[in-house]
Length: 91
Image (tube, rainbow, N blue to C red):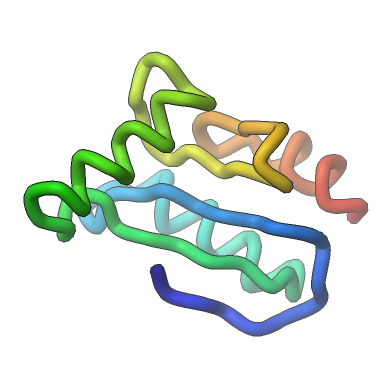
């Protein structure tokens, strides 16, 4: 996990792919909003680490698609949904 500093809006975690344009847009949006978040590029993980990350993604997003943004371990936003992300993080 990589951490990006910003305003604390709870536990915000982005599961992404390094080659995914929508994942990059989601990451840029979070930075633009000034939100503190953690992210990981699941495709760059190996073996058990990648399996564990996919299990976490599929817990919130059974389709296992990207980007998957998890907020406070209870709400997941799948895909680049700017308005939904802004509303969920109070902007």
